[in-house]
Length: 443
Image 1 (cartoon, rainbow, N blue to C red):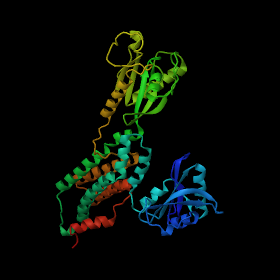
Image 2: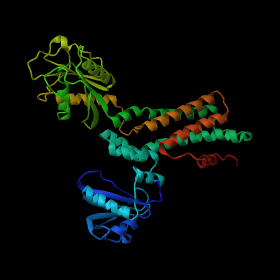
Image 3: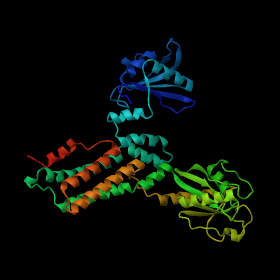
Image 4: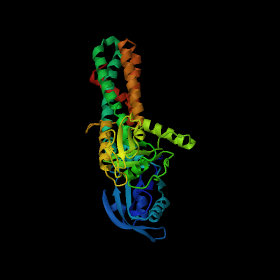
């Protein structure tokens, strides 16, 4: 990325639509746009919109557009920015983009507008990552987690941890740098207590990652049962579309089918599987093996029975964590079920709402996020926080066993670096220096 270049790109998704939006960002943004627009951008106040036309090199009109100007320091990137809203034809948008490039604009790299916002200090690294999470959020909960991160709530917690580690580091650095002064700003027990508090807060945040990962990836729901129990019909009913092939022939489904499903604001990954039975057919045996593996890994398992089948066929394993037992084909003559479960008919839709309610209830038992709790949603953040926790725990161990203060400081600085990698803001010598001044060290 060359930050001295003026970049441009189409910001709206590919395809036809009512509008398309193009963005130009950089020191030459106004000058470039001024060459292709019928108005005078340099006479416009920041954050004002203007109707005009985009012209081709020969003066022909490409499109009538609405143009928005944002001066340096008051835009998403922190640079002078022009946004052009044209009619949503891909051809029109591409022709306008080509004109921008003709006048000196450069193609923006993926994520470059957000990267420039980061480099100009408008957002930190975790907030930059949250932008993409916000765009790709598949559920209300995932959207809220991304919004929290974009608003800097995760950054506040990380900076608070860094500040606490800096406080401890400053005390121990004082022991190292000024041993002859006999300075002691806290006892060993007090420092150990401070480290315990830091570890408690960091570990609590670390433990939210499991729920955060569920939010981003979706909770896995596996349909399992004997052949012809109606698993494929249930999948189609839940999805509202004919995704799986349904026939009266037992064993139609041989491989795993998966689709995203939204229920009650939650995104689920729904799996249809091969019917489980004794068989010598090689392909079917492999399908059954995959079905059992999928069920063992799923967070919710829907065990589906054919309520019209003979009793011996209902003797099916129910010992899956998170299992929801259902009896299908209740629209046909049947005896009462031999054990408790949800009664439904994939043919008529009866009982489907009851099943959805049961799924939502299971999801609520799986996720434990409090209303205002900040959670980790990214593997990178989890790995960095885990490294920080390990180094803080090592520093505590070394302090307990009276290791040299220099080693303890190295452990704590490693923890600071790990936390810094989350938000992209390093703890510099100046920050530690300001803490030393608070203690009046070296006066």
